[in-house]
Image (cartoon, rainbow, N blue to C red):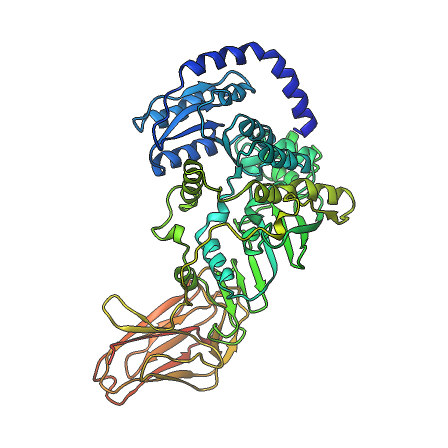
Length: 590
């Protein structure tokens, strides 16, 4: 539903429901409970799957809260959500289920501090504006607006009323993204130059259309009417803080282009046959939308919309600076002067652990791996304590403006479109404010301690070898292996290795008479490697399938290290090359 249709519906339905609004307002004023000190009074508009998820997380995580009102056009959904409230021993909320505009009656109660809005997209801005005009702080699901006009409505209303507004962009609160933010603010990557981000999520056969019948669900109308990035905020959420957008920099222009639509009709043919009505319609929405945003200070951001083609979920964040680069797809990074090998990826998880944001110090809570709980707690406690919201109205609309602006650019044959300055110049003097964490941090140490007090270091095998920091330990490569780095790193798997078509090995010098454990990691994503690994004079271990990667561990005793040298021999059995990618040494401290 476009903005004009929504506005006409507002006027038509408002006149029809005027008497009901007045009657509900009169009774709700009599029923308002006294506000307990510190009690947060909450309402919910939209009690579908997402709304009840947010409500359930809130009830489980945020203390001293009362849910006074729940609104949904489906009475059964509102009652189900109310059951979550009473199930926690709280008073039963008032239900507002009398048509599409009964949310207005709810906001007229006069006793709500905040409202969570989890309705179809076209209601987000009208409900957010209505909440602020009623003195209620809205937490709006994504995107908070669908056009530049709606963005300005939210900004203007917030500035006029003095009521804050936040879009509930949960991916801004992810542990990995916040750890990366800490690294950015500590200057690990130098000056940020470029970011790539995407929302790649196959939603076509369950979110836009019913999985069993192919019938339209409410988001389907947008694919029929518009060609644009319909869902940019999960991509852009963390990018704004990485790039200091609206606090030192701003988005200046956007250029968008879209493929034709191939995937929607193919899905209908594949799932339901060529005679299904969905296979015969014309859809406005292209399968892939690529937007390039240039900032005022010279950075660039690439944003991909990718919700209609078969694929695993991925956000494809890549952050590049003058002193390093991070890749979410590889779960890896490279930092000049810190990464152990020149121009070689190293795993990101040790850095994420070392730079964990204080919000995640005790782990996440709630849905989406704990992210929703972190977001809700920060939003609602800011409301309770009358503090600035984690994501303000300017950041909220900046993310959402890509919806309308990308559509304008595509319609204009990918012409660059000026990006509005929703801050009206305040970005020049506003300081970074999201998720500030001023603690001291340090890169992950090369040497760590095991649970039983032994010293451990893991080396990413390559040429040259990274420095060994274990006291009294040296590592030498024998034979003539080569370095390979052509595999795509996924998860914690390496993308590199040492390999040779001939036998090769590793010699590890250790203090004589020491004890500990040596481990090597064998990994070959193509499954073509067949080799043996032998430690000292022991029976060789045959490695026949390394597609999932495997650690081969060799405890050593004082007798093994009597000569001060431990040897690992790699021998090719048949097929391709002899491959090892990591070496871990665990040794008792002197």
